[in-house]
Image 1: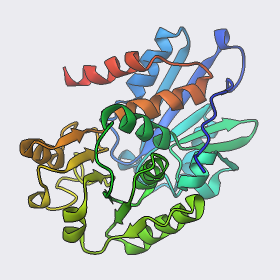
Image 2: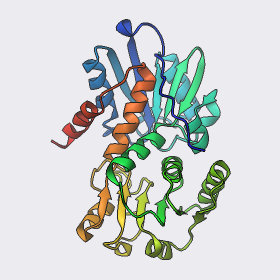
Image 3: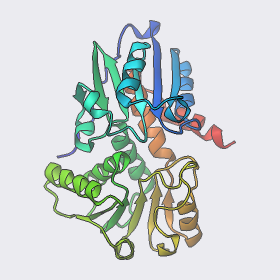
Length: 297
């Protein structure tokens, strides 16, 4: 079964020409996120009033549970929120409805507040699938190693399986997490070409491509997800992190001549889908890309 993506998105409320949209991003250590500017500038270009705030738990004076953060965002008048690390799975018990993608992935990155209910979506799934199709067409996919089985990793894994790769190997430091993801993938797809990896050296040697879906490499989580000496020039390498755009992991792969993909397109495509869910308007991907790229100048 391929996850259905709803292309008939309706506006959240009111007439579009009179809409004031208020959204936010909930996460930890997100001050450098490019998402607010992408959303607000696209809103301005489409002629709507669009406010997008950051709710950074790293900056809160007291520890706050995701349930309380959702309550406060909803009470403040938000149309919805984006959710990132470490809350993509934790938010699910406090939602009323999950989209097909969120149900399959068992993680949410977009929540709509509508008619007193909370609707959870996962735009990471579609974002990665689109980025992979546009950037990695034709790469060998007999054996693909996914590093990280959390919320982002689950979205990537589901997208990869639906892209018809031959064999997916899953590695996570928490073996229970990787086993749970593998079980859910097998149940959804009846695909038996999914395996749990405990020996990462052996897995890397067998892999055509490697994907980092962990936070390791972000500004707040320095390092590489696996030792870079394991990389070889025959690998293709993806890192879904986009801050920094070139992680130490990707830089090492580039030096070896590997075909690489950074996290920018996934970030942009998922934002495109989230914007459409929040507003009911179809944004221009290239314009959102230009806003994203402006951070590098």
